Image 1 (tube, protein in one colour):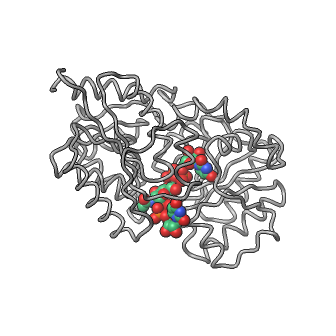
Image 2 (cartoon, rainbow, N blue to C red):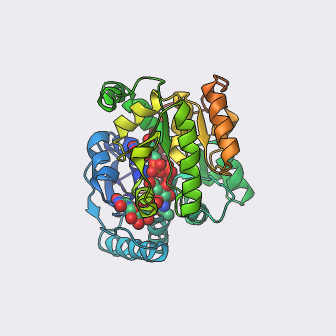
Image 3 (cartoon, helix red, strand yellow):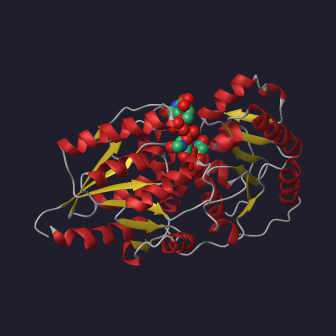
Length: 368
Ligand code: UD1
Ligand code: UDP
């Protein structure tokens, strides 16, 4: 290796930041790597973006493309165009993308068209639900990526079925769990429960932001009614994603009237503290399903499918879809103490970013 391996990582939306944090740390301690972060600006509120850079010690982005909120086509196209211009001005050896958001596919596409190899972290996950925008982003990103870093065995099976050369695939574990394990002591010291007037095990935690759950007022209204019924037995705390906040506002939802307490989107450590001390978690988030599993807090996923089947297999997560009867009965089962205790998926041990860093140096560094 005669010069350093020059990597640009892409961060765009909230769930990207927890994945980039341990990679940035691993790259910083590897003298053979130069690392720059490009923020696309897909998420931009302090509460959805910059707060996580501060809290997780992520270096300031080298550039911010400032794309902001747009429809799918316009947002993807803007990121593609702006990232392409940036690569034209300042090329690199590898572009690293994480997860399944619009920033992921747009930047992967810009890079591959410029002949720059793309590494995809959290590759191979499939919900098999093409109405989910993230499923399209996952399939397309994997199809054009050069190297695919996978969090759980289903990802390897899916990629093999799609004909991907196994030499391009590596099961590394889960970078999101690297962050969780690293941040747990700080989360425990954050005083979150006290500040919110909560007691350990005395509440349930909710997040909902999937378009299929929140964009249709009838569906969201139905889910809020089920949550209110569960909340009558165990108070629920619901940090509300901005997409959902806008829909609840349109519906004229009256939070004061409900057993579901709506709060602002939480910082990482506060949210981790809230997850760890919850009696149950009800969510449609991808990442939260995994985090609940590690924390061994029973999780109900309000979706018909999951791209993270390992969380169900190890007993940490149950799919309850949008059936109000099923949601309520599954929640009461947990409150009655009848939830299984989850086991921890292989390689979810806090060292996924180190494995990815070592593989990148071995794979691309030697050619320099
Ligand atoms: C995006 C991802 C989704 C991910 C989620 C994580 C895609 C297709 N979707 O969904 O996979 O699970 O992020 O949170 O990439 N908004 C703000 N402030 C912000 C960001 C968004 O108010 O900082 C509002 C805007 O009204 C915007 C809406 O939220 O239109 C949705 O944002 P967008 O990034 O388009 O999709 P998400 O639902 O956040
Ligand atoms: N999260 C957070 N504050 C919140 C809600 C979620 O810090 O109020 C964290 C959560 O712990 C996980 C990530 O955000 O690390 C998941 O992001 P999100 O649910 O937005 O996206 P998804 O994983 O569904 O793509």
